[in-house]
Figure (tube, rainbow, N blue to C red):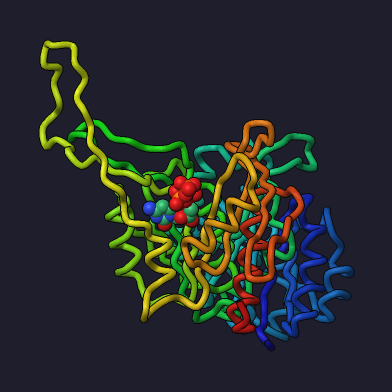
Length: 400
Ligand code: CTP
């Protein structure tokens, strides 16, 4: 794809990754025009950026030669997409406030093209209320974001603030250009727990945080998919950019999934309650003074995964379920796949000794027609990334 990228490199240690980004974008046939902020020049040299891009590097706003060759207004509009990587706290603040004090900020003010930022900064700076405000303003203005990731930082601290890895930024760029492998595809993702009411103030729930489903939806969108995200009351916010349907009960989740069809793929990451309270009260249940607890009757909830897998029409091309097991993982998950009629089951061992439940890492086994494929232990974000890529490849190949 011969897309043109205007790459603004901010002044942070992550600037070295942007040199690799230039190479990866060029490998994909894109052209890259680098702009270095004055601070970026302390981290990478204009010469390396220019050599890798095979283009002139821009730096100063009032460089008359540049103005003669290409004015800053023209420069800001010649690209199909403006990418800011790394986007420092300072650059984000200037963008959010509409400054036009140097070439980078002026280009960002003057452009009529979409803008994607890859923030990178110390974890305290990322969590500072001013940065949170600026991020919200920028997102409200339609600025796209990728990352930051969690991890060890060059400054020696650990947390969110590390710039997204280059492949992640490339995927976000492709998605922003409508060019990802899932462009034009619709994927439904269920996520989080369900709440089944006992009375107006009490409910039955489970400990699902919604983290894996959210990471998966974000990864699918980075590959260009349109995602309908059907979520129970999760503890993490839904991913930016998805069409979000908020539900509480399993039956509401089922209705929202059915309403979202047709879809090319459906991924069921929600921890759906198997049972609902049949005799839920419409008023708060009171103690009756006898000391006898109320007897709750249960009814089975619809099995959304099984129902969608067996739809005579409108069955998505690829239906994926999850299975959290504590023993005989592969046998149980293989049986579950057959019982539910889905194409894949993503199984994991959630017994306490693995540390997976509530932890940052996961070790999954993908069960498909081809058998059981054990993936190495990796971060939950990476599981999402790999799964999204596998979904994209499968939809493209038509071979499940
Ligand atoms: N699922 C669903 N609707 C339900 C129950 C489960 O869509 N009512 C989906 C989950 O989102 C998950 C998969 O089915 O993708 C497996 O969920 P799980 O709770 O492990 O399956 P169960 O049918 O409850 O199996 P078991 O109780 O035997 O473990």
